[in-house]
Amino acid sequence: MEPIASPSGEPPARGRRADALRNRQTLLDAAAEVFVASGVDAPIREIAARAGVGMGTVYRHFPTRADLVVAVYRHQVEACAEAGPSLLASAGSPFAALRRWIDLFVDFLVTKHGLAGALQSDSSGFAALHEYFLDRLLPVCTQLLEAAADAGEIRPGTEAYELMRGVGNLCIGHDGDPRYDPRRLVDLLLRGLAHPA
Amino acid sequence: MEPIASPSGEPPARGRRADALRNRQTLLDAAAEVFVASGVDAPIREIAARAGVGMGTVYRHFPTRADLVVAVYRHQVEACAEAGPSLLASAGSPFAALRRWIDLFVDFLVTKHGLAGALQSDSSGFAALHEYFLDRLLPVCTQLLEAAADAGEIRPGTEAYELMRGVGNLCIGHDGDPRYDPRRLVDLLLRGLAHPA
DNA sequence: TTAGAATGCGGAGCGCTGTTCCGTTTTGTC
DNA sequence: GACAAAACGGAACAGCGCTCCGCATTCTAA
Image 1 (tube, each protein chain N blue to C red):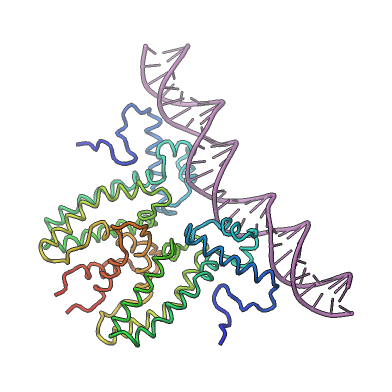
Image 2: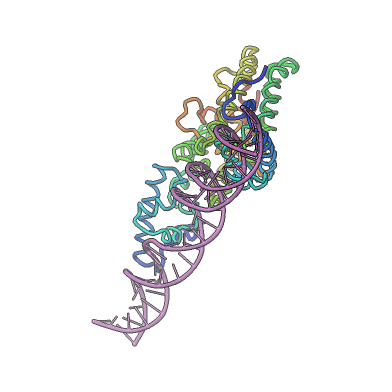
């Protein structure tokens, strides 16, 4: 089953001209390189230059920066989303599954320089990115939370949205500073979520 | 006792010309207004315009944006810093004092539009802001943490730096979204910090 | 009081960004 | 091959931070 239309980007290439498809791919590759090198805030010009195309071409394919980011990271988000149910089946308990899933989520955020920041800043037109992440990952997280709550492993009353956003925020700005390790704080958060004896 | 020299700003007005002192105050007032209206990311031009002075005047008095922010909020930061020891004396237990202090800290960040975000963004001229907060509040937080640890109320191994930065990050981007309440997450964090029975 | 120096002021200007727009080139089709 | 549609490139515009320097204001000392 092919995804019909996802928020902002990656239409299924119907009737596109060959050079357009080629450029789209070139741009995605270039953007991926630039993002890991300079973060998601890298100048659009830099991406265009690395891809060897003009500014107009970038904006035609990806009207907003968020569209570009979404397209680049779509695969990883997809992987994370799919990991949810399988962890629920394979891990020892729902809460263990939740922990491991959050771990994957943190992995993803932490390796992508600046992405966590982009997740919450609605101001600069990252709304589309925010929306996509939510659409895709929120149901997964909700499922894990509910399973853990049903099993009596965590205190009820925490929404997936809040949890994910909190985790995302905690992952902001870990610039190799050994004094700040997002994982330790996320661990504290999850401990707080667990039922007190 | 007069403060001798504080990091970035507010020198004790010795030998300054009258118009300079006047403009400094005008700028602080204007900045305070603009910050509540448009956040701490507001264009410097806007602040200069509201104060009725030129750009150069702003930069002469406050070389970086952080200096301006620090000067505007200095009193409140100071109050927060001073609240630490007194809470330790008045609250029921060290951990209770820590909780209430963190609460004050969150209050401060949450009511200042965009301040929490600015605290972690090393990109702009906000570096000094980060530094000032750390210089002033880190010792206080450390004292509270150590007291609670000595009392056996919290698990050891968490540094004040990490905790403060985590709390700061959690306060980012609560744009009146009822689905995201930083306080709930900070509460979870503190629960996780508390010793498990 | 008044000249001269010192201090402070204003805003034009530079460089860097995102974003748009349109003349030109490439591609697909008949 | 010819023609229209699609896509391209990058000049151009706008908003921003920050600097720089000629001019105005204030202070000081004679």
